[in-house]
Image (cartoon, rainbow, N blue to C red; front, side, top):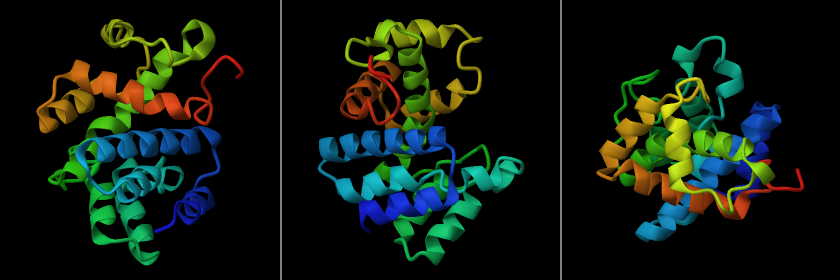
Amino acid sequence: MERDKALELLKRHNAEEGHIRHAVAVEATMRHFARKLGEDEKLWGITGLLHDIDWEKTQETPERHTHVGAQILEEEGYPPQVVRAVLSHGWGICSDVKPESDMEKYLFAVDELTGFVTAVALVRPGKSLQDLKVKSVRKKWKDKAFARGVDRDVIQRGAELLGQPLEDLIEEVIEALKPVEKEIGLGEDD
């Protein structure tokens, strides 16, 4: 499993820059948590990078999301734990595969949260994560009109699966995303 080949595969199935940026954000976050837990950073990162590989193919049929992705990854020879993690990140939405391993639980928890944190950064002066605080994210969290497409219940369920306070998870995601800020379309130069 090489990162360059995984990115090439992702881009073969996804043309929209926003989808690629989201994948890179989830990859960075998964790598962060793998490092923190002493897990396989490459495995977790590639899983994060490829988790939505089927997104552009299944937008019109969201119930197929994760299933098509799992099939693509199986056909490409990715390990069963990557395939299962991709399926489980849609738990309760488009999949009945419950996240069980730490990698699966973190992927489930951070998928929507990376998007929400990025959205909060985009409306700030400088569009940066460097000075973003949990308090600012929580303030936007309460505004139901903000980032309507982000399912806050999924994020909350993910934090509960991990047994972590939501605030701690938000703080870790902010830290995880800082090093890839430019790659995901944030920062003052953008």
